[in-house]
Length: 243
Image (cartoon, rainbow, N blue to C red; front, side, top):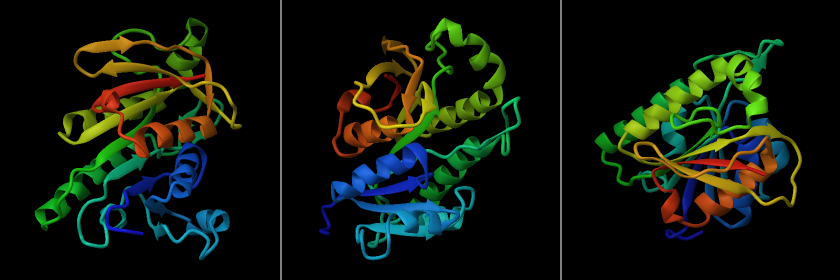
């Protein structure tokens, strides 16, 4: 690896969207760090020695010490990109969350870690990609009308946490892209990912509404369009993705 290799920190990459994005990034040769509460999950997927461009750090996304380690490069500066796909698991048929403040706390800790490292002399302004969900637009409905009961009643707690997370990143002054996916399912497909673009202040630039998108398709699209290449029109915007 050379000093010009893009460095990417992952939070929530042991499963789902984050794992798919990590796999694509590693295959492209990027230097990746991944924070994981249970490193054995990732070590089972990426055995020791098989991926020299991956560093796995044990820790929680709500703990500033391992978060800081994850976003700091070997030369002491900040990584080029930060990908956060953390979220709390639902509990029970009412879709309550095990940690209803998981995403907002993760955003606060991450932003605090960036500020602390800068105060200690670290340079760099990472592009933060935060994975969220449709149903949060302040500029109109961004999901099919038939899904109204699910979005409004069952997903209320998850949406509240994601909305606060989004607002923290948008107001932070950092470079960001928020990715809102329609309801997630499993299985990589060959379907075209459709993308709607929203400006947090000016409103929608384009609209794409759909029912589902797979975790694998979401992660691969995120890596190919936000990590591996710089897409100017997506910077400091909110994207809705669906198939």
